[in-house]
Image (cartoon, rainbow, N blue to C red; front, side, top):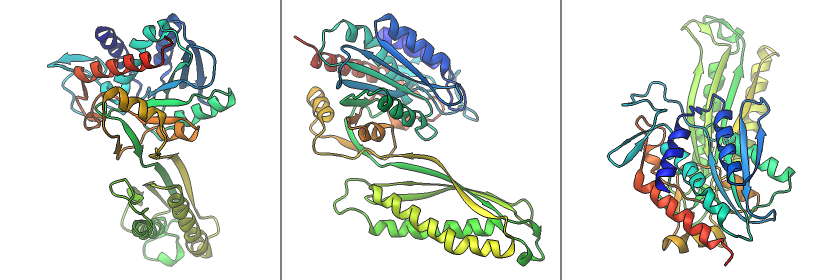
Length: 385
């Protein structure tokens, strides 16, 4: 089984599914593999037709069952110093090297390697495979997958999101809301600032308001919150605008994000910044020139995974692994999207997040083996005796 998982992983790594590129060849490979073992496979394309989600099922056509979830896309390798071709998996010193080995094609490979056993095992509840596009750029694919599941009236009950957690059971993480705000001003000579609308200056004021809100969020932290830090965080990622010293810049762009610990914090930030823009910034800008403005693009609003008392998937995996407790992670995943669909969800997968997105990304072979062992136990737990 381990050799089969390694073979599949090598095949998956060979598909250079960087988020800016198509994943259709990899999806076709996975679809063919699952169809060969008898799975019912659905492929749902994105609006461009260049990418797709895959949803497949083994077992009876009934509600419930377990989803094995992962994403197809990987982060870029440009400007990284790799010791070998990142899209040609290399085994060395008990590790498997290649882009996506731990984040997160290792889990996909283990799930596919287990598919023949899933197919051969009598069961009353189905096993589903949900493999998405564009997780790395705002969990876009998972959002579309959720819409597809609702449209087709598919209602799984449980989900394991196989992001790298060193096979620890994780039942909580913050949300991740990402935005790009663009400022459109009026160009002019630097010697006459009152005759132009300086987009950079307004971007700076907008940024200052966000930093003010960041401090306010600390006071909104839930009592005994489980996260570290326990409050919603807000980060300024990039601020770009202007070219030379003596020209009033007509354009600026601000990239920012927040990681809510509770939905009300996201509402608070968005309402406060919208009021500031509508009541102060834009009126000032338009007193000079009417055709100016501030627009915010939602890059992604990915719900967090909320720790809850009743979680059948957590209970199952803790029993199978012998773990005494579950944990939290600081990074985001697609898990919250599945939780919002009513599923009991955990994050649990092979490898360490410390290796993700870096040059010479690797997955310990022992981690892949442990993942296979857990999936075998899950299969046995779902079997009909």
